[in-house]
Image (cartoon, rainbow, N blue to C red; front, side):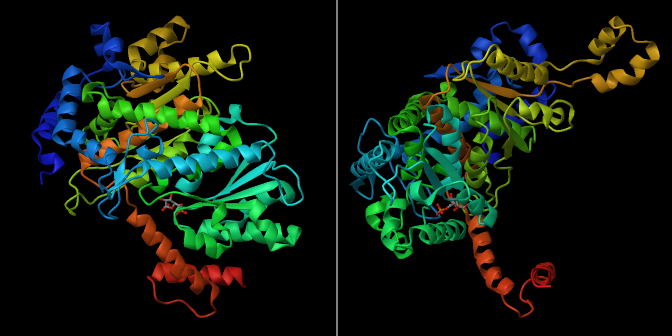
Length: 548
Ligand code: F6P
């Protein structure tokens, strides 16, 4: 099969890049008053401005040629039709079915999965309402006040990010906690904050074999029984979310209290499934449903909009433009506001675990760069931490800025100030400041020639740094659903163009195996010799520190 770099469309982009690398966005804006209108797009509640990119019409056309030549449309149809596009694990990729609000049949192996999707949603609704309304009580008859989600990776990052993001919808008397790390201080510090009589643990693990989650679940269970004394009370305080009923039973949770999902839901795409139970309990099932509605709206847009007006495809192809032609190594996600502070960490897993691959669909090494290092942080805090490198560093870091026009917590002009900072950053990154501009300003401020000569170069901001701006009127469950689905489909599209499997994670699996092999050796007395010199040496050294 044709490698991406051999495609006509790829070669055309290489040629086009040779010209575009000289282009300054300042000039593009100066020469085209319509640029903002032409390179922006409203989809439902989300508005995207992508005019601050180093692109002209020709660039976008060529990028869309590449998307088309890569059969993005066919692969998109395959995903929605439940074909087993996760070919290394022989699985369908159907997180879109979890939020298929149209309820049209979605077939996997000849079976419509929608009835079981709806049945689990119904159970989540009943359960979360019972907890919220005080009908599901703890073992001493008290209302649940704290929900602790025990999970890691996709079984943690998604629900944690959403619970934080929708904090304005949460009830103050029903708190959500997230324990993910096997490092004991994570669970220990959380258990210090909660009361066994009023705490509900959700053990969230797709496989129910993940060491971190099971270790934390066992610790939580021991702690609970130290107080409750009777195994019979476990059922009121522990529920499971998993695809693995047998392992849930073996852990000691009645499968009556298990919320099911399926192998066609990838871990990093699972917040829409019962993995979202903590969301439903914390912010209410109606808001969880609105989240699904928003994602469904984005799914429909992705499925039906022509590539040229397709928001996830536009973002994907811009990412490819910078990764594969400009050589950008990283991509920054910069939400403005505190509630979205965990979005970069969430998207880091979604993007890097999906597209951090180097073997293509024909099992060959790729000849091109794949997923970027995704990182970021929330504004304005990031401005006082890492933005200097974005402005004056030597690297090209394409950025996504995200903000809601309104806040749930209006205080004076504080929210307007937040928005002004975001707009200022996109402007400065793109426009920069030339030496002549700096010199003029310094002269006007009365600086002498020697000072100007010395200081002016330091004050030059190169500019021409690309960014996308995503705006929404209000930060709601619906817009959040749209936003997350937007990134999921962006990641999907890039994976298709790069011809990789975005849905497995064999590197992570090997790391897990190795940790399982090292743990017993770390606990044993015998010296360890079976690994490489460094690993053997480190094991020996750490053992001597553990037992001096
Ligand atoms: O980090 C690897 C991974 O397999 C992720 O894909 C997944 O989200 C996470 O582990 C947790 O897995 P599980 O839900 O099976 O505990």
